[in-house]
Image (cartoon, rainbow, N blue to C red):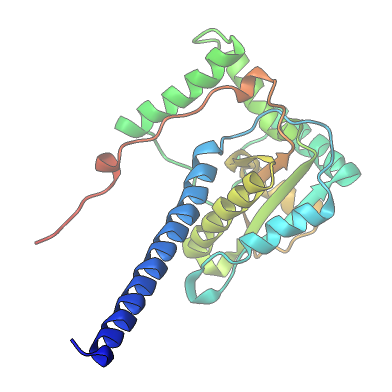
Length: 255
């Protein structure tokens, strides 16, 4: 082998080595990125006890900036969000709690589940009993169940509550886009050390919410999100719900 050919082979080995190195670098970076997402998803839980400490506005705005990147149909970005804090939150809390505890009828903009059947009922029961057992509520104590459910309207003591609403004309797909937004909002909050809980319960009083915040009748309330710094010492935040196996949720069709 002449010196020219030897040099060529040496150069090619360097190039191949560099390509392998870059490929491994990309793979490692990919593993790190999916690892961060998996960690956030695994750590997130529905927080039902918060510290009184207020969340600074820059942190809230960072959550909103991250969630604003949510994908939506035709990039319509149908979500609008009201963030209530401080005295404004407290006025809203008092009004919606008083209404809910008075036995006011449901006033939601979207149909709530007609019925939980089969596995969906089983999962709902499992989650509910985890909550009640953690709090020491005896099984079948419906009065205690109702009292705990009303804590939704106290925002579980959170210093902040977000109300997510969308345009009525966009129908169910506007609400679906909002659901994706809520998921990203919660992950962003989790990444910043906050506790968060999405609450369909608040949407039971959609008319009150529209009146309180002076929203037009074309605005449909999707849900609320209570958030703040979690009280990790409170027993209500100690349990975690289960997740189904992939085989229970996905079907692969190859042929």
